[in-house]
Structure formats: C-alpha cells, structure tokens
Image (cartoon, rainbow, N blue to C red; front, side, top):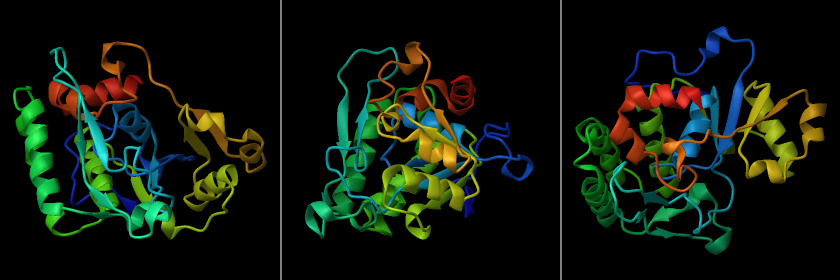
Length: 255
C-alpha cells in the first residue's frame, strides 16, 4: 500500500485527513481514476483515509475517466467546456480502465495545457497550480495509459489540499465479483472498517452485505452553497485556482 508522497508532496502542513498510523479505524473510498476529478469526487476522496483506485472495471467513454468538464472561473460568466484525452480501447467495449491507451499523447498534452491555461490563467492561484501541472504534463511522455494520467491528475489535486492518505489499486487486491461483496472485500483487504459511498452507489449497494462484514456503510454527500454548485459535474480545478489550496482544504473539511 502506498502513501501519497514523492511525486506529489503535500502543500499543506495542516492535518487534512486523519493520521492513518494513529487511528483505530480506516475510512475507505473506492473510485475509478478520473481526469481532474469533479469537486464532489475530490471531496469524497479527501474524506477517506484510503483511496482504492478502481482500475480493473470496464472503461466507459461517457464517464469521467478520460475527460473533465472545465467550469469558467469562479464568479465569471461563460460556458463550461470539455477537456478530453482521445483514448483507444484495445479490447473494444470490454477494455478495462488499466488497459485503455491514449491515442495521441503529444496532442493531448498540448491540448490539456492550452485549455487549462485558457480557462484559469487569470485566477489568483493559477501559478501555484501550473507548477504542479507542468509535472503532470511530463507524464504524457512517459506513459500512454489514460488511467495513469487520470489517477495522477487526481493525486495532484489531493496533494495540493494536503491529503496524506494511502493509495491502492484494485487490480492488486483479491475480491469477489458481486458489486456489494466486492466492495466489502476491497475494504477488508486494506483494513478499512468504514466504506464511504456516494449517492450513486447508494442506489445499488446491499447494506446487509456490509452489516455481515461489520463494515460501516457511510453515505457521502456535499453541502449546499455556492462552492458546491455544479460540484457533481465540473472539475475541482476551478475551485482550487480560485480559492487556493489552503482555503479549499478548509472548505473540504467542512463538507
């Protein structure tokens, strides 16, 4: 199991998630790698002690694994715009996230840099974000795996708001195939006694499976307020570059 460090050192000295070594129980979130994830997704992962990156499920073109919806600068008018990484699926629709490949890495790197700069270069914290972004862009030259870039883009944002949790990929763990039982098995594999579940997951989760394993099923929702408008659709980059890492971390702690 890997603790977030090295490639993305945290920016904040504040404790933005519980110290894993000093807590009796662990809160686990299981989520696919998303490209510059939505604010609601970032908030859920921020709340967890362990993020299990779900990399061995089917890649979905209509999901957020290879794209992010960029909102305009906070408080400014204008439309949102999609940032997408063209991706090829070697096994067609059956391709797993870990096997999806970038079709045009060089062009994707350039477009990622251009669109993010176009949207957020006038924000108060663009320079802070861009320093980390440049390191992520270098990754386009070292891998053609879409999932890897998406995962690292999420870790970039998490590190900037001071998250110090652990990251584990699901393909490294043994788990059943049934939806609820698989989640229980994944939580058990990392020693978690609480599973953090978003509103979408609560529609199909079987609570009895978690009860039998003595794992708490904890629903996760975000509060109402201007920060959270569109949080389930648009990338967290807009909030990060507007509020800055320290302030956004404070807002995330409040939920």
